[in-house]
Each structure stands twice: as C-alpha cells, then as structure tokens.
Length: 564
Image (cartoon, rainbow, N blue to C red; front, top):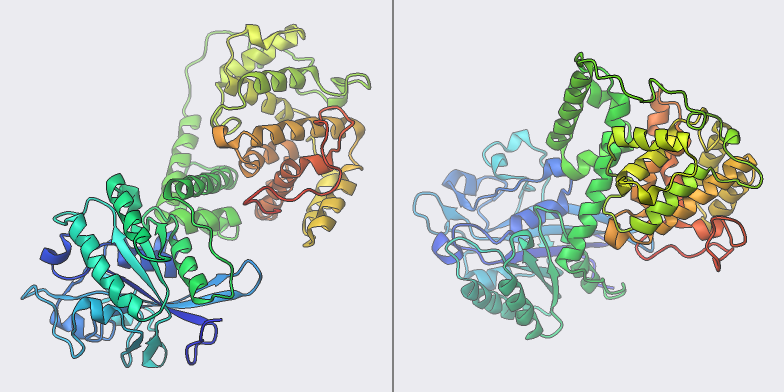
C-alpha cells in the first residue's frame, strides 16, 4: 500500500505534467493537460470547459486561485473500487503562466526550469483555491471556494501528457524531446509515471506510433490513449496511475483508443435512446416549455444520465426536435388517396388476443415465426436492427398481405429487414394485453430488486412459471431470438441493453399516466435486459425456441457485462 499523505487518509496526490511555456516553446495551443484534469475531477458534461488559457494578467496570476504559483489545484475526486470502497485523488496541474504584457513567464518565488519544477513531490501554497475555469479568475467569489488541504500536497504519481494531434506551430519531435527530458526528471523521484496520449480524437497515426516507441524505450512506462473532449479513457489514465501508486491493487487493463471510443459511443447512444423515450412519454403538448418539462423529468434516471453524459444543451435540442415533430403532427394533412390500410380493413389476426392466434400444437404465432426466421436468415448483421425504424406504410402492407395469406413467403417479397423487424414489434404493440401480463410485472420488479445475483435469477425464474402458457411460450421464443441477435453485437451494435431499450415498452406496456411509472422504467428495462443476457438459464434446453446445450444453472455474465 502506498504511503498515505498526511491528513488525507486513502487519497493520492496526482500531478499532471507536459509541455508548457510560451507560444514559441509549446505552439499556439496547449497539450491538453487542463482538459484532462477537468474531465476527471468534474466529469459531468455541463462542468466541462474546452478552453483554458495560460496567458494571464498580473492581477489574475496573483489572485487566490493561481496564487503566484505555476501550478493549479483542481480539487479532489473519488471513484468506486471493483472490490468495494473507493479511492480518492487530489489533482494538480503543473503549467507555466505567461504575462499578457511581456509574453514571458510570470515571475515567481519558485520559478525554476519547468522539468525540474514539474517533478516536485511536495507542493505548498497557503490559502490556494481550487480551480474551475478561466472565467473564475478575478471572479472567485462567484464560484465555490475550496482550498488545497492545509496549503500543501504530497505528490504520489505523475501523468505525463503528450499531444498526438497536429498542434499548431508545434514540432512533434521537439515535443517528444521535451517529454524525454521531463521523464528523466520524473524518474528520479521513484514515483510511478503514466504516459497519457492526449487529443486522440484528432490524433495523427505516425505521432501515436512514435509515442508508443518512446514509451517502449523507457522501462515499465504505461501508455493510455485518451481524448478529454470525447471523454474516452480519461478515467483509465488516472485509474492506471492510482493502481501503480497502490501496488496492492491489480493491474489496469489498457484499452486502445478506438475500442474505447466504440464502447463510449454505444453507451451514449443507449443513454440517448432512453432519454428520447422519456421525452416522448413525458412531453405530449407542442407548446410545452423546457423549464416545465425538465422539472417534471428531473427525478427520472434517463434524464439525469443523459444530462451527465451529453449536457443540458444537447438535451434541450432533442427536446426542441420532439416539439417540432408534435407540431407537424397537429398540422392538417391533405387527404390521402383511398388505399387498403388498417383504417379500411378489418384484421382477423392483428390486434386480437394472443390466444386467438396460437394453438397447443402451434404455440408460436405463425407471423412471429416467419418474421424471426427471415431476420435470422438475412439480417442478424444489420446495424441498429430493432432500433432503426422501418417504413410505416411498408410495415402495414406486410401485415395486410399476411392477413390475406398466412402462407406468405417473406423471402419472395421485397421487404427490408427493418420493415420486417418493425412489423414484428407492431404485432406485440397491438395485442389487447401486453405479452408480459400486467399482474406479473410488479412481481418481476420485486424480484429484480434482490441484490444477490443467483437469488435474483431464481426469483425471476419463479415469476416466469406463473405466466399464462401461451404468453410464456411466445415470450421464451422472442427472448431466445433477441439473445441470438445480441451475440452478433460486433456487427449490428445491438447489445442486450440496446435491445432491451427497444423492446421493453412493447413487451410490458406499463401505464405511463403517472411519474412513478416513468421513474420505474429503468427497472422494466433492466428486467428485459437480464432475460436476454441470461436467456440460457431462464429457458433451458428441451423446449421450442431454446438452442440445444444451454446451461440450466445461472451462467456467468458476458465479459464487461453486469447483472442489471
């Protein structure tokens, strides 16, 4: 266990360093140290500032935030540990502030060459305030005033930043040369160092290769590819350093930038889907206002998660787009030419009770069988399947043709995979009662609240046994299909979580007239996610729709997945 700094039991002092100085020395922009610190210490999108400056007036340099120092105190951040508990870090950034009159480094009592000063392991600055953003300087009273603890900080590890983007007026070879000299100073401290490649969202491939070669030439120098703007691998960079400081913890798994970017993009897309679903149900009047709607949605996790990841501005834009759609729907439309649509034909198959379209000998509706067989034969690799909507008129045409001919061969028709997928979802939406019976939904929610994984799985399985026979057979058939779709997630980008977001409103259809139902939506989605993810346990082999050889005991979660 690393030494614990005085007065900060369990907290590490982490120092972020990298090329600094005048424009002649570092180019027209910084290497991204401030953005990296900002994203880690204050990760919410609304708290992220993309622009920071090192050119200050004499009064701002002497203010209580900078405090006549060439380093910033970013504050304390806490993160949960996989094994329970948490780790905490005090983050500082070593920079060099430039006088806005002389364009030379501000004079300071501790002004030394940057490489030597940045390698300091003991920092002191009485009454120094935590830094938020450039706008704070000169207006300190308008921001939270939190001091660096006891006016001093012991540094336990260093995050060495190298900008791999095409920085303006900056030679990458010179930056690496500077980093080499700085690393030599850091190595003398015997403290762990992690190399953070910054701005990988604009990274130059040759620069990234050269930076990895730079690390290979130094013994045990870990490399993390990051982007503070895209919020990719920032947590990993600081977490890796913290694990090196605390040698009692396991090693971090280093994830390449583009793999981490894909994971982050999927996470954001899932959060946006949930937020748009919430807006669609909470906002029904085209004259609604953001102030009123956001206050109603404030308690919903779908709202809070999206605001955290993407920020209020993007959430408000999606809200405005939803209002525009509502207004368009209210505009009178020209009368369409007469056509055989659901308004003009009576269906004997769609919109009728489930028991009317199944028999003991044929427990799965023929239409559902045909749709799933077609999708699995032609569309399992279709990107965004079930999330990307099919054409409404084509979906109705498919249902009408099937209504007239139950022997319809979908392979002979010119329907897209998304049309067939949408028509299948529509079948469940039009059932008089949801496939997951209303009287079973509360029991499922209660079972899902159980913390112990195996107990939760067995409790959910017991509730499944209470389903009416026809509902159970169809639900089993659909969940097995969705499990097979999720296994192709590398191609179709539809994880069990993404599929559950698309399907739970269709399969469960709770009453959305109350805010309680909106708030409980995460539980409903988590239940369907768990059924898809652990399908072989819930539906063991020997029954229709279940792949042979599936385990009857609770299987482990897939890599990277968690029990919802």
